Image (cartoon, rainbow, N blue to C red):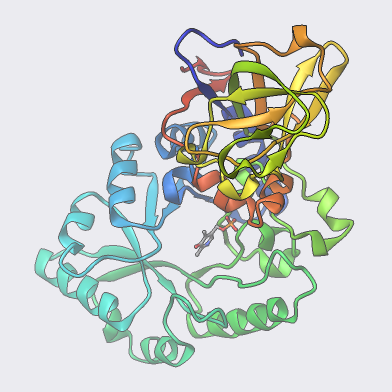
Length: 384
Ligand SMILES: *Cc1c(COP(=O)(O)O)cnc(C)c1O
């Protein structure tokens, strides 16, 4: 946990906690297969490291969004028994490269189905794919009419081995939203048209909606990475969906200064000091994905002799730096080099995200490239 010289900030990623979250989600639907969604570099945590840790724990199916993400993940997970799905499907002209890398696109348009089928014919072998059907989100997937057309005339699928049919929930983080039930019913009806195919419905929050939502393949993302999949509107059910902490971001104090009454802190001089104040400057800023929306709103935690002390961000978040009001701490607990927790370590991701006016997904996927990343796992040791 200590900083070596040169480190400005450290991003700890706890792969044991990640694996524990994956096991817990899978355990909620024991008859289903638990896959893992690792798009956007595993929500900012590192797709190669996360993929390897989950594969070692028994995960055999991964989802990414882009073809390039899938090609990169295949390098990290070359085992042909590990299936990698591309949620956006193949890009026109890119199909052959995906087949060569043994990737399994999720087909979402009649054009993608036709192109994948044409490639199978050209190669003279069957190609694997999954099918995405929209049931109410109106974002990706065949319309229900297009799906029924495919089901009625299987010639559309010539040369394609369909692994499963899937849809995506629009409101699963709000358990009482009526669209959940309506999508689950539409999906159950759709599966009758594809009687021999497996089905996949639930993202992280969907797993918490109960057995009707589980089907055969689970697709959790955010909950693997430690954020709470349910919205605050879920009330007391949200306590039960609290996940193990995976991400801990620690910045380092560069300097501490005394600021007199009447002076201001930071850009725009928006933070006016009303009594003599100790200000600590920390080497993390919005260029590191630490949202500027946390200016004057976010919190940090410093471990002092009186325990963990929560301190406010004073003034604006700038590109490379933030300033904290550390007057509550003993000067000995707060000096150049002292680590400061900015996410995790007592700062709840969802709470910090709410202060920034966003969601944990966005804070995680913005995690910066300048942090020294330390992956810890009891089975592989400290893989820094
Ligand atoms: C991102 C995504 C998921 C994972 O969702 P979480 O809410 O992060 O669990 C699952 N399915 C699809 C289609 C997605 O786009």
